[in-house]
Image (cartoon, rainbow, N blue to C red; front, side, top):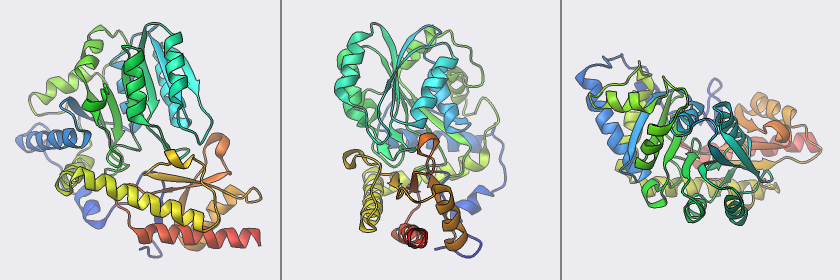
Length: 366
């Protein structure tokens, strides 16, 4: 798969890109105020709705995934609003920090690293807090390789409150089913550099009718991320601000390809390669960090033997095998490694990464 100059990039984003997508990203610019862009935007919006299984509004924002998460907050809450933040890892913490930065009255519900959110605890917490404006959480915690039970969490929130549901799906959307309308999700935030087989640079959000109602009441300061600007310009087939055209070109093709393949097939493909990764890690005698019931289909987190220096392990893997693995973050630094398997990925890519990990561990533990 790789050559001397082309490492096997197995991070949980940004993902490696096939040659045709790389070529497309280098295409000549177009007039983002012209008919060509308007046609592209219309097609992309329709296809994104298909992937998200929604009739809600969708928007493309030039930013990182964190920008999409911030857009979810600033467009729906006001300072002082009560927010329940469900945290299972680093990116759940980030979502809470964004809400706090905009003055939200945030209650955090934390779970052990490697565990998904417990539905009973969510239910109990919602019953203890009156007038919760929004429940925010990460669907797929790429820092721990855990996927929260999204549909089940949504059901609990709907049963126990009138709260908005704001979901960070940066590392899940496009690779894992998210039935926005059926599950009653108000805002989904994601970004181009994950399962969408595109470079970083474009964030995407969905926005429900209930979210629009909250937007009308929101007093949070906003300008660049004000979804009203994106809606107004969408009506004339334009972005409100200069877009990252190179990534829009690749996203247009990626979205069309996903719809043409069939989104059920896309999700099944991600599940199969994830299971191949998990089985391969276990075959090496390694233990997964997450509870297997909630193991992610886009990134696998694997425990390192206690005697292994995680930083040195990652360094040797790239130096000796030309494979780039993800490391642990914050308290997991040096304790785990992560293999990304979202977007464009084949079994041979995973096998090469696992072989590199096996050889490196042998040299470090012998």
